[in-house]
Length: 186
Image 1 (cartoon, one colour):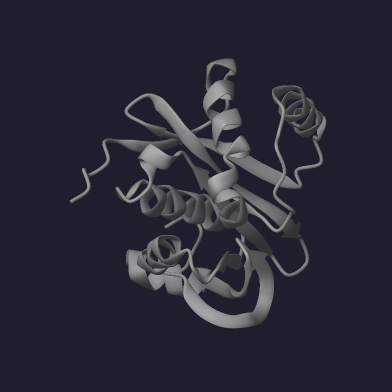
Image 2: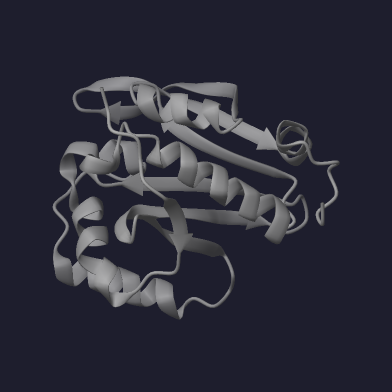
């Protein structure tokens, strides 16, 4: 049985978080759960360069937070791919191994969804996950996401093809579940 998480909060990245974030980004065992790129070793120099470039991007094309449990960084969550006309964005999360399976991901996703709808005026938030990442799919469902479709055999994951599960949540669904009237200020 897993230990319930402590206080899960989202906060800005600090220099003290970079070792943990590098560890998560460099974890080859969970590579396919975090993105579509081909697995490859990640050096600290390449990670630092990528982080520095992201920090220089002031376009507002992504909003990234550290996932913090009781004052300790355990991963990151972000909104990206903003569509300013249709008011939607994609969400992604990456957690350290010891933070998984304890409700941390569900709590973090719920918080980023609230941020997206209340603070970023999104109408819809969507995500994609490989079908074998059952724990993540369950966490997304607990946060209110529904399966919208599949891309069949779209991902090559550890020696076999897997479906990509497409999920989304609308602000109206989130508002109803949260007991809000749908207005941003409520």
